[in-house]
Image (cartoon, rainbow over all chains, first blue to last red; front, side):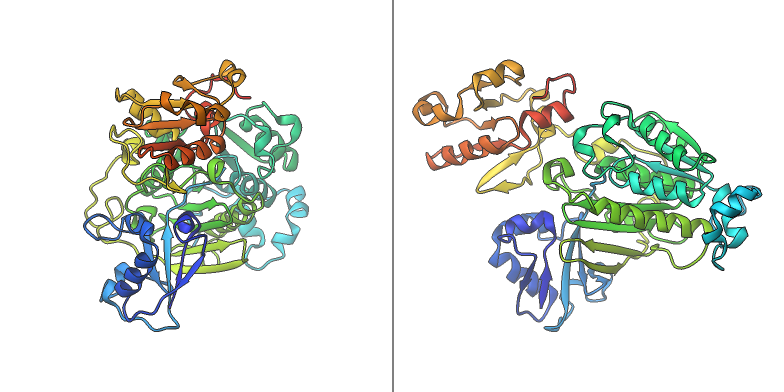
Length: 91
Length: 393
């Protein structure tokens, strides 16, 4: 599946805006992503392993927080996972 | 159903109005009635910068009757790459004056209300209460949460937009039964993780794209027509020109708009966003192995009485113009003068804008210094964000 990397986090993925991973669940996909790019881990997860509150994960256009199985949700190769951090710029 | 039509009596259109707004009036979705709604509407633009410029210009052109502007800043040459409401002769003027002049030149019938202040928890409700729609064009997390909370508490919809580099987000928050900003982001990121446009840059056209989307949503909220972005987050990627949308849901446990709210009045948003916390955030941006510290983080550490070792790698003439203290070793002399830099202490390296100091920090790392951080944005960021009286060069 494809994981979209937002601009503020591309410094930790070698500038890539999308990363391909092979996974059967969202959790597996995130584990692969952070295994490939270890610096990302602390930006996405708390030390306890929870997704940080200012980061939203979307499977296609659905908020992962509202999926019945949440991060254990199964994924297909054609699915996309978007990481959407808050941005505040406006001036 | 419009969000505003029940609130006050709608003004009549004059003959001049019928001519000026004829392209609107001919639209079945607007018509005479819709144009009267626009004329009767009171919209508040928070910020007259990148987003606020196109937003206010289009709203003025569209025939919005009353436009409030909140800003305390002055026009700077570096604004003009995107803040199209201001022009070169306006450099040094108050943005409010410059914007109001431009808007009333565009539409002399427009009533502009200038709020010459920084938006705070103390004044936000009082300013917002007289408006039907708020458009958030601010540039920092504390104000984003402040605008959201004030809108939720007063029941005023917020046409939201934000930008970073080539990316934008837009939505409508706090509309009836719709999610709010806190439903999407319960907490802000730690200070320094997401750089501001001043640090990270922004494509000048991007706030134009996003600000016009906000203006569109404002108009639709007033007319009560079409489908607004309430419940959706629109993502704009200008570099690849991709627009995507994500579903937003109202969080039943949202601390301000949920069933059992814990926030029932405005709070201290600087503190909420971590700016006032004495402990520096443990999540920092790292560039080529060198952690970056923001000027706010450095200021708070100094204020908290921490013994911070500061290394200035600029030239002596620059130090003469302005400095924030610390030891001066010009970058070219650092390799020969390593003995003067204590490798057991954490060292904050700074220069004018953060580039030279980053190179020197990397050099120190190569020489085995474990605790070297770079001051992001350098003394220019300090002069902009911490000490406006400091001379910029």
